[in-house]
Image (cartoon, rainbow over all chains, first blue to last red; front, side, top):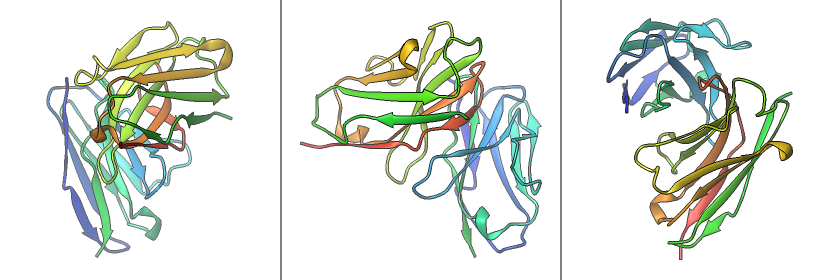
Length: 105
Length: 119
C-alpha cells in the first residue's frame, strides 16, 4: 500500500500567519491527493482535491500544490476558524496521513 | 442534497461482530462512478480508511483489516453495510461513511458513530 507521511504533527501559529503543511507519498501518485480539515467532534471536510483544486465554498486563502510524491497545503493568512487538524489522503489506495494539528500560538 | 448517516450499536463486546449501516440520500449507488467508503478514527488518533464499494458492486479493503471486513450494499434501500468480525478494544473508534466519485476523494461524510468495544 502507498503510505503518506505528514509533517509537522503539530504546528503553533498566530492569526494572520502563513502556514504550510507537507505530505509525502511513499511512491508516485501523480496528483491523486486530497486535503481535509477536521474540527473537534466533527466529520472531516474536503478542502482540496487533485492536489490543487479548491472544493467549492472553501476560502481562497487555502491552496494546494505538488505532484508525484511531495505535496503542500498552504493557508496564506490564518484565521481563527482555521485552528483544526488537517489530513492529506492519497486516493490510489485511500490512505490518510497522520494529521497536523494547527494550534493557537 | 447529499446526506449520509451512520447507524449501529454504540457498544459491542470483544469477539463479537459489528454491523454498521450507512443510509444515504441525494445520489444513487447505481449511478456510474458513485462509491461509498467506511473510515474510522480511534479517539485522539488519525483517520483510517477501511473499505469501499462502488457502482459496479466491486469492493476494496484495507490490507491490514481485509480478513475481518465485509462491505455490501442494498441499492434499493440506499444503504451500505459494513461488518467487522472479531471486535477488539483497539477497534474502539468513531466510524464514518463517505461518498466518492470514481473511487477518488471523499466529498460528503456522515457525522460518524462512536463504537466502543468493552466487556
